[in-house]
Image 1 (spheres, rainbow, N blue to C red):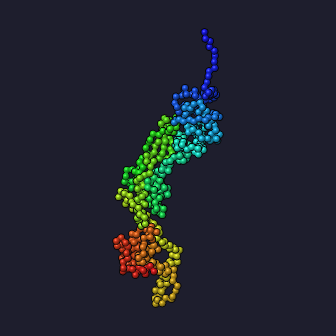
Image 2 (cartoon, rainbow, N blue to C red; image 1 turned 45 degrees about the vertical axis):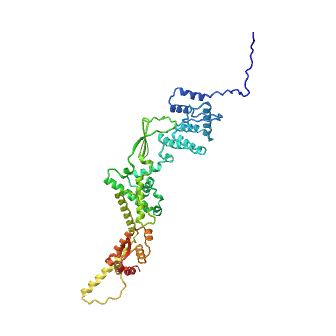
Image 3 (tube, rainbow, N blue to C red; image 1 turned 180 degrees about the vertical axis):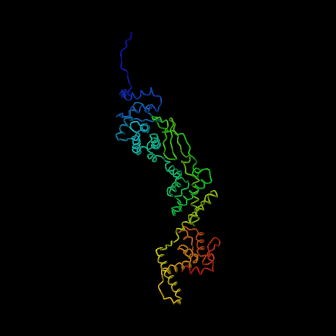
Length: 480
């Protein structure tokens, strides 16, 4: 009979006995137990987060956590303790870089208002984290910006908190300007047109040289087009360019773990006249103009045509190819340019002021002269030779008026132009300087000199102005 005795189990030299893990703290066990009664992933995250909203830990975690849709339920025991230990330090101001999935879980908590007492406090916490963590890792920032806009809308926070994160805000504001029914000042209107135009007019060489003139003409053209459409078309010019508002389905907090704890039955959030959000029984929609996401091509052609045609009218040295537009639109732009330049020329003409206070003196002197003549005629005396006297105020004004009627009034620019023709010097630089078209300058001079010559002294030959030989000497004398 063979006897057997207890012997120690032989272990290899590489064997390391397992260290018993400490028991998981009670809050974590309660947190995990919720999974048995809550079946929605978003609702479970919300319930677990609220349970652990104020929990703190100091576990030394050296691992990582990577998950596409990170949640508490997706973490093992060590990862759970590692996350809450990192969050504890973060809330105390010790911001450390960690696994990107941990970062998203913390953002999800704030979006669900876990750990904050109000929506305003939650927004401030999101803002602080965004600024503090940016220097360590920016991978979550693009999602965070979009979620913060949704956070403002969902929690009915002020609209002023949105623009920083809304890349469409400049286009939207410009669209709001054009959509208004009441008049808009030229500066605001021109800024909106440039923002929405596919043609970058502000980089134009001609605009940089004459910004005020270009802005005025562009706004005049746009207003005129609006009037034309209101009178002759079934839709407004704004609707022609940008269409009408449409309603699109909208998923709030897209790609985030978010539980809709407010359960809106009927809710509207108005960002502006061109952007509105609606929620009806949990279903979100977005009302806007479909063209708000891109620059407008037709508006770009209009502004480029104004740029090209203004350069041509002002004899600018660097011309621009004019884009193809309907003939009626091109004629409308040309008409507005001619009207603008004519008005500018009228305002630039010298102003003659008459001192009306002298009228009473003139009337008094005239009355004295009349009484003297009547008295002498009644007496039947011969008219004596008039004694030399100083001219009266009436005589001075009358002489000045006669002289003014005798000599046509040419302003400085018109005289400069005639001197250029007399001396055979180039006149184009001078016309560009004063922004007056050649045809308007010649017509104005001929009109002023017609009474003197009973003819037009300046003619066009091969589209170039020339002086009639018979009037050259008279013109020289006139300009002395």
